[in-house]
Structures are given as structure tokens and as C-alpha cells.
Length: 252
Length: 212
Picture 1 (tube, rainbow over the protein chains, first blue to last red):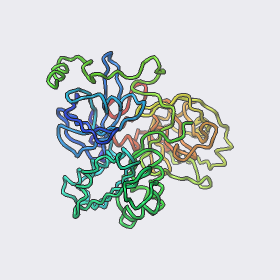
Picture 2: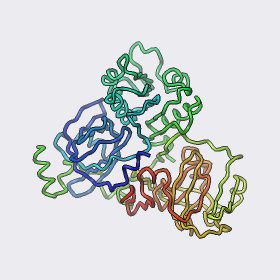
Picture 3: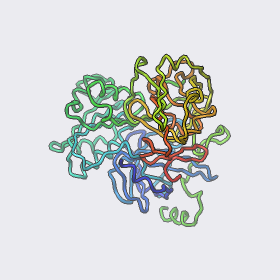
Picture 4: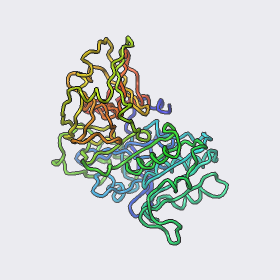
């Protein structure tokens, strides 16, 4: 398993913010420069540690959204209202500031760019981040795995990486991108706003006979529902890897 | 600005990290293991689709190093004496949930007739998940096979119909959809342990990853 690379001891390293990109009204991509960073496997995440002036620290994990590169990585952070860390990363931190990072982490929700097996990516909201790393790494490796991405998002202005995804999905690229809008659709969109259902899944994702590797990432309820639909459509549970975040919807 | 920040780091002063970050007011924070924050909802972390395990085929089995099997079906489990426990949960992804209420069967009850000299438990779950821990961490009132959460049957996404509950270790040791325990003389890494997570996982020692 890919995780064997994690056997060494992980240390905190200084990371300097070298660039920021506003992606949507609430999400921002941070480019972090890290001396000695050896790169990552698409799908992995990184721990980010913030230190306040009085020495208090807070650590959160973020998926890496960039393609693997030495000395640099990108995370894409969506602001959680009332959060302790994401409002700082989305609104406060500026180029030149320092944080600390530890990683890359995770040996399960990962995809090897040299793989040529059909690949199915399913993103819900900011769950696009680790899947974008996979799509970028795939393009950087010259294509290969025939890939479909189904991206469920509330409304058109919440789509992260829209222009870049359109470019990556150019004719002949072997990447097809489909959108499901759950709250508001673009003008002239052929489908009313709504959640991913079995019909859309059948239309926009690989059929089970192609036996794709499936990666599903998003809020808990989305991942639960989508993974269940994929199993019901005949995909083997062992071919579906999931990453969930956020609350379940029930607070009990 | 960039050059200044780098110089400050080389000077060994930690306060230069995260200019302008203050964090939450500390007085509101309960007593949590280091690096944890409190959550009031109940996040779900699983590696794949949620397994649905029918009660009529459910079984929990302990296998000793001698190959002796001790099995309970759902009805047999329900007939064992159960306990209500209120415990704090600590997930390696840094959330802690305090004062959670469960009902289940103590591992002490399940191990009453099990004879073993093994020191380690390799836990298997429906869906293929595995995890490992020392057997002594399952005994003496420290662990349960839990089937009720907050007065209701345990929901599938939280490990229902039954999960292991070992609240003094990080939550990945509390295997959801638990199917059984194989007793072994050596400590064998399970699913996340093979992927670089800690073999033991004490939240108070921040044993998150191999080498911590």
C-alpha cells in the first residue's frame, strides 16, 4: 500500500505562503512553499498548524489540490462560518506569512497517475480538492486513465476550478466533466436543480461493467448517498474509496 | 515581508508563525487531549461505502490462538447483560465529542469463557476494515460491543448494527460494523495502521502516526 512511505517520522516544517488565488466568493487557494517537500500522491492531505502570538496552536487537515511538485503544494480552503481556522486562511493570511505543515498524509484515498484503469471521480462541494489533484496529475502525466468527473455543487458561482476543468476536459483529453447543481442552475441548463440520483449517475459516470476505480469526496451526507448509489449500480464496494467531511446532519 | 518572516523563523521565535491568528477564546475550551477541538455534531469517517449488515446473518466471533471459536448471533448478544456508558470520543482528525451515551455488552462479558495467552487483538469488521490493539485495552471495563447510541439503535453510518467502542484510544480503534476478534501473540497492523497510523493511538499522547 502507498502508506509505507509514511513509516518515517513526520516532522513539522515551516511553509511560506507564496501566492493566494480567490476561487469563489468563499474559497481560496493557498500556495505554500516548503523547503525539502518531496511531493505527494494525488489524494493525500497535509496537516496545517497555526500558532497565535501567545503560543496557542490549532491544527487542521486539508486535502492537497495541486498536482505533485517538489518544494510546493496548494490547498484550497472553503470558509466554514464560525470556524476557528478557515476564516483566517480564507480572509487573513497573506503572501509571505508562515505556517507549519506536516505530511503528506494518507495512504488510502490516493490515485497513482501511471494507472490506466478507468477512473471515476465524484465530488461534492469542496470535496473537489483532492480530486482536482488527481485530474491535474493525470493531465501532467499525459492522460492515460479514461476519466469521468461528476461534480455536485450548490450553484454555478460555487464551482471551484471551473475554467481549468474546462481546459483539462478538452476534446481528446480522455477526461469528461459533468455538473450537478443542487440549488441553482446556469441559464439554459437542461436539468432542474437537484441532488445526484440514480438517473444522473447512470448518465454521467462509468457503468459498473467498466470496473472503474471510484473516488468519492464531499460532505458526509453526499458521500453516504452517492456511495450507496454506486453500490446499487453494481460497482464493487471494494472499488469505491471515500473521504467524508463535515457534520452528518443529525446533531445528536 | 517574505524575507522578514523567514529571518524571524531562523531566529527560533515561534510566535512569528501565523501572523494575525488568535484562535478561539481559550476559556471556553473544555479539558481535551492535546490538539483536539470539541464538536457537537457527530462526524463520520469511513474508507468506503457503508456496509449494511442484516441482523439475521450478523455474528460476532472471538478466535483464540488455539483456533477455538466463541460466537454470538444477534439474539445471543441481546441476551447478554448490557451496560449503559457515557464516554468521550476522540478522533485522530482532531474532533472530540464529549459525553456520548451508548449501550452495549462489555468485552469482559464476551471474554468470560475465552482462554488465551495472546497479548494482541486483531479486530475484523464487515466490509473488510481491520484494526489492532493490545488485548488488555479491551478488558477491565474499557471496551464494549455497542449497539445503541443515545437511546436509539446504532445507525449504519456510525457502525450499526454494532461497533466496537474503546473510548480511551483514538476512534479508528473502535471498529464500526465489528465482526470479530482474532487473538494473536504479535501485534499486526490493521487497515489505517498499515497506511501509516500509530499502532496504539493514545489521544493524550497524540499518537497519531507511526513514529509519534
